Image (cartoon, rainbow over all chains, first blue to last red; front, side, top):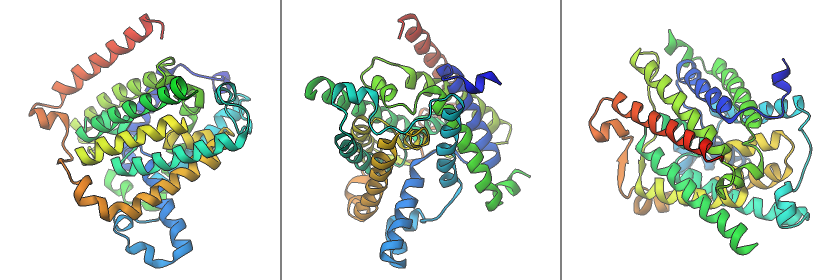
Length: 172
Length: 185
């Protein structure tokens, strides 16, 4: 089982693995792999803790009920699966600032935290605006040949490439 | 028989968790949970993310369409519109380039110990999703419904048999991967 302890696998092996995983989830669960709806449901559950039952009346949460479902468990599973993988290869470490950021910007955690938080807010809103993320649209939607997903996935990369280029080539 | 498994909610929660564990394991082994790998992709210096995504789409697309032809799976294409897919997609991209993770890989990054993903990315995405829920009623008609095309798929748009799209798309994606390898990327 040495391969489970390897630090990294070929991207093709990983991609084929994810493709096979999508067959399994279509057959056994009748669901495409996706992650961002779970964040919307969690946001609704947290809002309900603060503001009570009336949160359920919001039009968006009537469409996406704030509750734990298959996809919510999937995202929880992603955390656990990545933890297992990183532990097995000895790559697990608590880290505030990624090495690339440290080299380009500096090692102050608060700067990275603020930028990550800001990026997260924009991405969270954008994912719900587009109705999916890199997994829901980028993988599951593209493999179903959905027009919405091909447009969204192209837009993800156009927006992402421009933003990363501006941050790393212009601002830094 | 399959629909009986689909409707067993409690069992599905466990299946979802197991599917997620496999997904997270693969993402971490592929390096897609690493900030420098995602930023490297967006700066067009490291093509790991594209290689993972294209091989997943090729494998998934052929398999899922085969399963559908055999009556073992149903497609669930997401509905979309120009106002939602393109504007939302570009906004997502701005967040993607700023955060350096996406909603799936941010969860995986948190699992491997990246605290910027856990306390910055995850918290931010939750705030952003909540913000979207708040503005949703205001933007639904004027923006999200603009240029609505529903759950259209490429084969239905082109009015051809799905396999007439599946085969050329797989061929083009394989060619792209071969070119990337030949170029040493």
